[in-house]
Image (tube, rainbow over all chains, first blue to last red; front, side, top):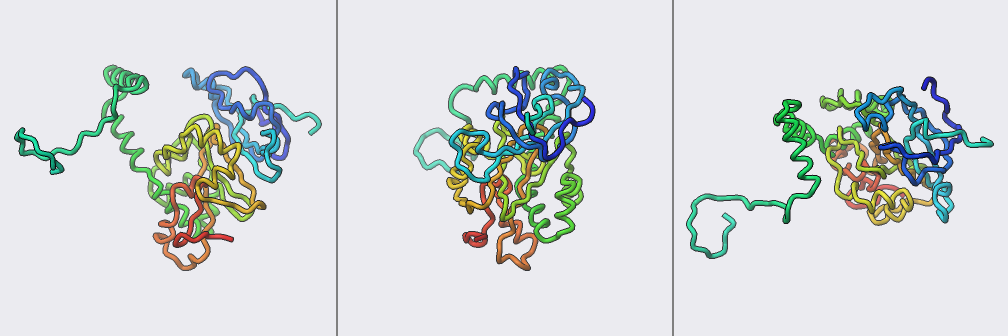
Length: 97
Length: 220
């Protein structure tokens, strides 16, 4: 992968896709929508590293912010959030964003 | 000598109580020992390497982090460098090697945002600075609950925050490690770095505690 596909402020959805080994994408965030807050860098793919491969091509890693109310049904309204670090191949553009 | 019981065997040496976990070794312990012995036998690593690594890990402790936080409270220029480029700044300040493939991110707590840190996937923790994480940090209860009901978990740690403060749970899912820079308690103007550092507990740097002066809540 080349240039990061997403920029801070963009809305993204976490993919629901077959979880390769050691994918580092938590289950509770799959299918959820959040906002990119930062491009954290370009890192080797952890699913490949897990098998002693070099993890190439490296993949952009994003810090993504989720509202509690967008993750959990019945979460109390308020401004509380969860931040997670997610690799680009686990994200899709949120439609209508 | 700790012996107070009466018995008739005769020995003249002191010995510390032998502390071993009850029961046979776990599967993980057997696997670890087998793998370590094989790696040593095949000259891939040495027993000395293993010990050096354990020593290096043991040399990291929350005291290092507390010093960093105290300095950031006192020195705005240092804080700016710390937020911008944490590991080199810490390495320069403490003279401790911070070489790691990971990134450290410093999360500043303010009146608007209270950060706390978890790794829901395993036990990722800023070990390069704080050493070994506490047992509760690795517990399934903390890891599963804190992303779902952070205020309830914080309350169990004795921390209650205003509704208007955003509670931001940072899940260390990948290559970044997080250090919370807590708010400096009121009433600490003019304190020395050592006195300030003494207020900064391990939990405060994870975000599950708030530094206080003499047990008093440090902020309104």
